[in-house]
Amino acid sequence: MDYGTFSHHVKKIYDYFDRKHPDPEKIKLWHRRAQNIPADAIPAIQDYFFDLDSLPRNVGKTFLAGWNAWKQSNPSKVAQPVKTPCSECRGEGVLIARQYHKDMKNMYSYAFRCGKCTNWAGILGESIPMATRDQLRRFGYTT
Ligand SMILES: [Zn+2]
Image (tube, rainbow, N blue to C red; front, side, top):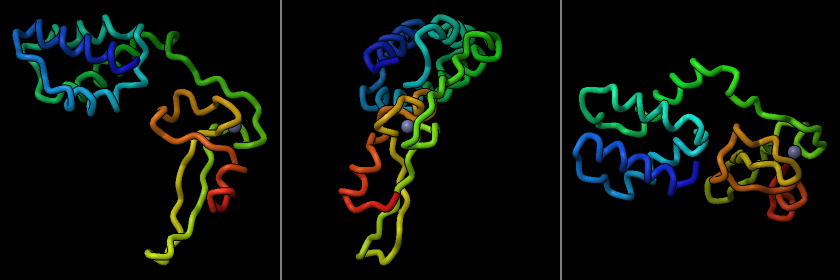
């Protein structure tokens, strides 16, 4: 669910409880955790809120709880991530690359979305950078 849709529904929940809309920065933080929730689940998640006696303090957390409840009652609608064969990431959709940091005198590992398939969908959000092994090597990573 994109930010605009999420924000719209959060505001509707606040309206229901006669509360002033939350700060957009707060909605952005909640959205980071809720971005993988499909739009299909929204009506049920809203009902989950409307069954509460008051507006919860942590709306992001309650959104996830509502989504978990929806998944439990709709197991057939929960999309299983479709994996396609991919030699770049061995079908995992994730590339782990390491880079040496001179200042820290240490190797660090980083996760990237595979740039050659979409097997990362449903596992990694779009805020995780996407790359191919060639690109990572060019930027000094060990893959
Ligand atoms: Zn891949």
